[in-house]
Length: 232
Image (tube, rainbow, N blue to C red; front, top):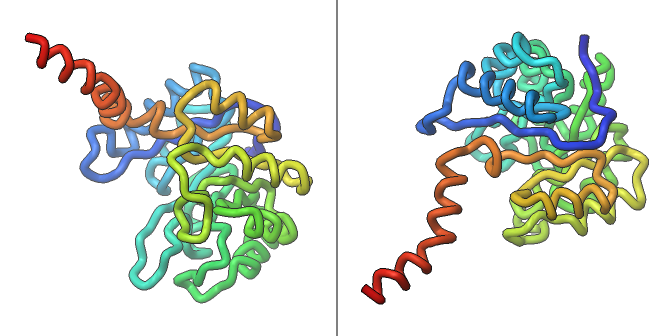
């Protein structure tokens, strides 16, 4: 049974890339189980293989996508209609797609892609980068608008911090649930996004990429270690 996410809380993005120590469906399924046990209200997952295995072990809804780098296209989050259908067939409850107006590699517009998915009742999350894209996605009738791509398009706000202002602006003008995603690393940032009107917050690297988490701690203490060594 496919389900939407109606609660407020945290969704954990369980994704790993080739060459990383946790790359592979089994590892990601175990990560998803851990996130569910910790209280996550949903999982965001990449690729049909990971989604299919996760579906066997967790009960919370899965937001599925398929990241693909395609030559001559900047669209990489579920870039084609066929990608979306494959992810849904693997068991995803909600399909995340690129919600920008950039040229899609299959020649379809965003509107055409949304129309096709809605025709067969597939729930859609539009990953957008600015307010204009969010408003347009809402007009198309998507089920969620996520700020995933803020800072990842040349025309969106560029910051190392999460775009909570974008969450607040969208939440104040659209009736579609707004999802906060991208660069969330602290509980304070998550609470601020919820206060700004986010339905839920998606957290990825801060929870599920141990090499990245370790690197942040190492960088945080490097100046102290250097200072200690200089005193020796």
